[in-house]
Length: 552
Image (cartoon, rainbow, N blue to C red):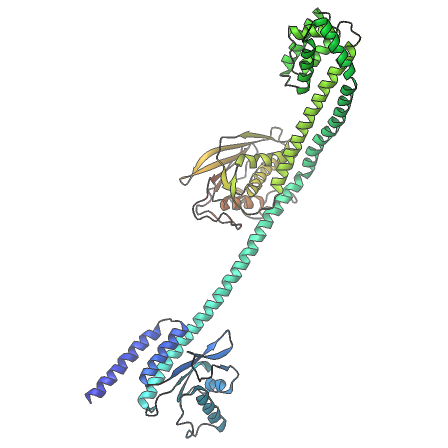
């Protein structure tokens, strides 16, 4: 009697331990393993397995895999449908004598026992929905009495609950994984939309500038065309009159002595180099002094010669004055030689105009190329001043008649940034200032740069200030909102400052604004390098962990 009690106590203890383990949320396989191990030990079964629903296969598949056992049953199998409607525990020895079973039911149960090579079947059903089917092969000596049946029912109840929870959890994980994938897809779409939005806003700004840029390029292009034609004429004249130059050389050597010709040629070479003539006041004084000295030497064409030399930045010393006197004293070639010198000076002036105009066009094209560049999202070391200058060059072609842009640059280090995006920041802020000051005769924007500190890290500060009417106090809190604008219809989309703030935040920087009746001041502080771990290849706008500071 004592032995029987001890055995009963051990079974109850194992059952309590099993209950506690089933309460925890576990993976489906862990639940199956725990249930099978408990039943195998309790019923001394030689074989145990469970057909569990596989969502991805659409079948009830056996676990663990076993030789000689049917690996899976379709959802449409008659036995599966029967177990869902009749989840009673079945023993192979009782189905023949069970009067409640129909012949069809006995047949499909016998078939299931045969395919699983088992003696006991335990359907696991919840609300007529089949979760799984356990099959066991205890020895013939094990009978399903009241105690064994009660034990199986308790284990089945716990198993159904735990398996339902684990299957539901697995489904939720699948749904969450699907949702995460959808979030990733939507995030990529958002990144693409944001990039397109910035680019569209940039192209809209560029469209406003097109007329001014065309004029800005057309002016130096016209100068180049005229200068090129003039240079051709100048060179043609010089080449045609080389014989006259040789006669002048011979006459000068004869009258002024050896070396005089070299000095004349040197003067012509100096004219071709065309140094800076200096201030107009000094130019007038030099011309007057040269004219006086030439007239004292009775040099023909004194006024024209002094103007030619002074305007081309050349001084005439006593030695060269003597050489000129040898040529320009009633010589038959003196007029032709003056024309020769004038053509040389004109060639130099036209060449200088060519170079100046080409540099102007190159500067505009470079700024235009940088500004219109499609955003790659890549961060690189860049010069903030170069980005500002490119923007000012383009805006200057549109705003130069109505706005004075003053630059006050300090020496700055290169920063790790997306200079294409920063160009959009400068454009929006300067354009906003210009539009706010429209009609003001003394409109002025001052761009100031300086080194700064941002949360204990090296940074640069860019301040854009205007002398306009300022931002109304009631409007100031809303200026960063997308699609909010105070401009007339057709003048703005209301996205400019929203894009500006997003770009600054993407660079882990901050932007502040101060406004008064004397104008608005936007202050941007950008780190020289983003914090450690920052994704410099990101294209979606990531907000800084410090809030934007806005003051009025």
